[in-house]
Image 1: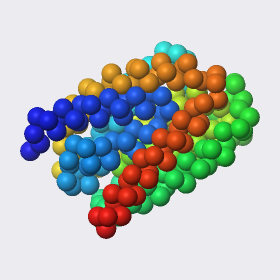
Image 2 (image 1 turned 30 degrees about the vertical axis):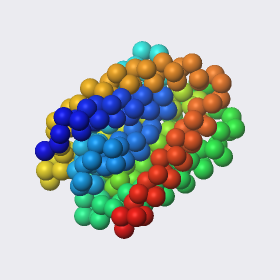
Image 3 (image 1 turned 180 degrees about the vertical axis):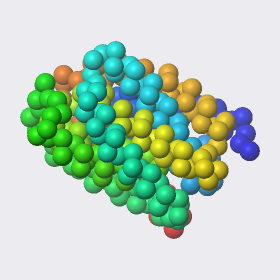
Length: 258
């Protein structure tokens, strides 16, 4: 049982996670898992992963509503991506539950670094303002969705930090649209993973509740900031910078625990 202070820290952590989801469509679980383990003090990495998956899914749904009001969401692309990834998320989370928790965190950090590098390389790629999913790029969208789903489930994450680059690579849509659209899949992947972890009793429900409340407030603020930055070209750099910072910290902490 957690203390009142730990629950308060959980609510504050949820605010940071929601802000990240609203701002860059990802980083929710990148932040949620280490915050739950290292700040809130959840001792079981699998409980941290399962609880964060539920909280991030709920916060992503709230962020999706904010981006939808700003017309940033490509619903067809989000639906195709999510449909392809749900099966992968279930399979990946089944494997992840059987994997050593500390090793899972270490691998998670390594994947984050790779994705951050890829995003920096793509930041100057030309986007297409009216990009849509069609029969020509649908196979790519499906492929990225399936692969992202497996990673999302295995690491117990919403997967936004993988989905945003996947949408940009497969459709060349602008970053702001990829961020909004990614939340469709983040929501679907997160709930799929959370249900799998819940079936094994690996979710702290009260902690998830306070995390979600904090995240809803943070998500609306993040979406507003993303709109202001969308025309400056700064979003990919912000995305990558956040990934590198948290990955470095996770590598340090998980390496010492191995």
